[in-house]
Length: 221
Image (cartoon, rainbow, N blue to C red; front, side, top):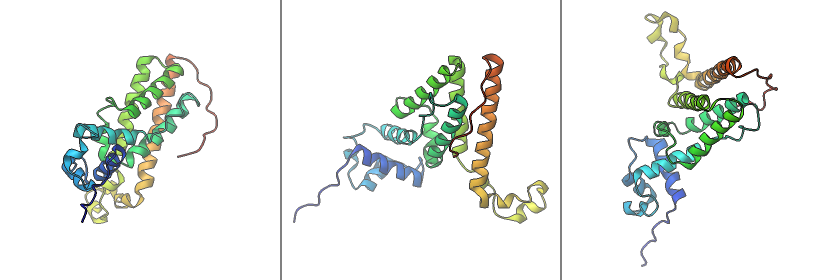
């Protein structure tokens, strides 16, 4: 009887399987041995496609960043571009929160991450922001979006009204937050993003020049 053929490997299959493992088990539980077992191959087979574990993590991180839409920069007002990009960025990271700590280290040599940074920086400079300030805005957006995607504020409260009733009189409705997790977390992000853009708009007008009124908002997220 012929021996069963080993499953064919590709970079894409490795990355997709690694992403699923990290989603399910976190970065701490991820290893090349665990990945190879999930793929049904021997560990050394992975090294025909990736030299190190970090290269695999880089590829997973870049695949997540590649889901972020940066097409708004240069096509709509920079304020609206930031808003749309922020929502797209958060959606991509929130779908894969376990990889966010790795992503937060910066773009490194990852193509999708560098493409995103280039689009944002170029769009802001073209809109009149000084290069240094454009860099600051890109950084603060990363801090804000990554922080929001790391976990759920609403799910941090237990669904036990008795916990809050006596000792925490201002939190008597906190047990209901987890029930409304999506509304709370997404509402908080939208509010924070709008406030951030409003503050940046004031800074722009104080130091660079007047801004035109924004056109009616496009498709909402």
